[in-house]
Image (tube, rainbow over all chains, first blue to last red; front, side, top):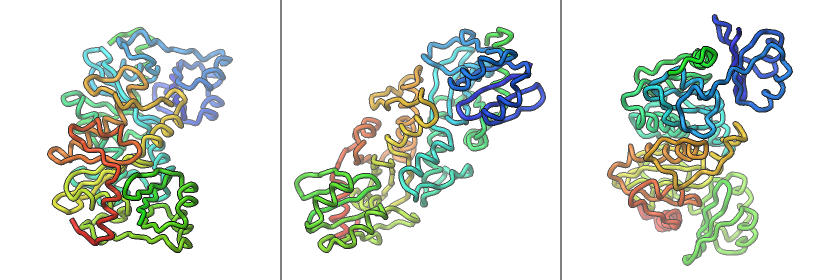
Length: 206
Length: 206
């Protein structure tokens, strides 16, 4: 069975060997006739794939011990994958979830790197700059580009560190390369969500 | 002379007694024939007011000791106003500037509260929530609304605290009420920018 994670803006497939990141249109067209186990946070796509006879929703939210209201199924899968530590998914949004001994303690959400850039650009053309993943936190910024990179990435660094002092940090998602350098020994793993989905299928708790 | 601060989305007038916050259109119409000293970060408005014979640009950027490249004239005025401490302007953008013994050490920029909300809404309708200025930082969030308020306001709290451990925090701008509660003894002062402008006019350094 091919595993499929349907996000807000992209769709991701894993066939046990490699991960393919596609647009919704491309992905649905390419895999419509395959045997697929999926999770989905996008309501519009969810209603379209109901007619795909070989696709099966493998969501199993009750497997995760959590009293978070409205936790997305993608965050549930990621939390099940790590069982202990902090997992950061840097996609359309940057979600952070904290797991301790198999229990989900909670989490929080920033806009994704692209949404942050668009937010700055919507305020003033002068603020429409690239976010620099190599920004230094040793000194206070002295130009617009550094000032923005520092605010976005410094926020993630400081807030996660406050709650993850001794916890292992796992990073996944398309913008993982922006986030991982913020933490010593952070582990990038693009298979995390599929590992969580496999646990859902096997009914394997943390 | 009436003082006028022209921002990216609003225009603010101070007649020595009270501050008026208006849209660009309203403000220009109402004060066109008055004697006005202004600073302006909005290029489109700047070109329009060149024909206002009684309006005078009071910008005096060289008054501030700073080697920040491209520092907005509004941030220069705010920095001149405080001379020592951290000044946070919560408007279209949330700017932070750090002053030490009359010298501007640098600063950084987040999107404003409105731009943050729009950024979340652009990712998913599920993330289009209000930011709660009363969010607690004692526990990890367990619902979407808290998760977003915590990320936005927690970022500002943590990053500013890292660089302002013993510094006085001054807060100004339309969303000052979201920001001030994050810091013990933060001082809200909506006149700060006009105090900086008065220093510009008098050529009074820190």
